[in-house]
Amino acid sequence: MVESHTRRVLVLNGPNLNLLGTREPGVYGSATLADIQAMVEKRAAELGLSVIFRQSNHEGQLIDWLHEARETCTGVIFNPGAYTHTSVALYDAIKAIALPVIEVHLSNPHAREPFRHRSFVSPVAKGVIQGFGPLGYILALEAAAQF
Ligand code: CA2
Image 1 (tube, protein in one colour):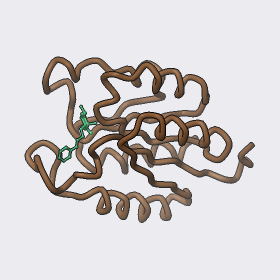
Image 2 (tube, rainbow, N blue to C red; image 1 turned 180 degrees about the horizontal axis):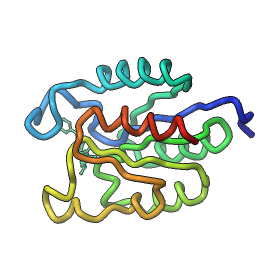
Image 3 (cartoon, helix red, strand yellow; image 1 turned 30 degrees about the vertical axis):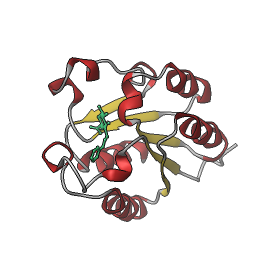
Image 4 (cartoon, helix red, strand yellow; image 1 turned 45 degrees about the horizontal axis):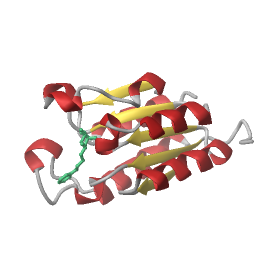
């Protein structure tokens, strides 16, 4: 169990987000994932939060990290990438860990192709922030600092 004074947030990133800043800047902006990590770590320190920042292209790895967070973290900020729109396994994992998960998207999936309009994560998320680029991660941190 995490002690009450410890606020540790897992910031989890799904498939292809390692490519940020290299392609499709019109959709995802020019910041790299390393840039976002630096922004998040800076704001987290100001908020007194400790942060674990991770990315994987593999669904099972994301699920293993969510399970691990149950023991080590007080909340999760999660950009599940395209798995958002496909993964019953992520839905089950988030439900199982019973931690507040804030779903974040750089773009606004509802302003894009219809296949991005359904999220398997939103029904089990505490809240959703989308369409604000990297700022979304910072807004999610502000929320995570409250629980
Ligand atoms: O807007 C978001 O953050 C998304 O989660 C990004 C996913 C997309 O499948 C979701 O619908 C919305 C895709 C991430 C792909 O990232 C790339 C970055 C650079 C170049 C190509 C892909």
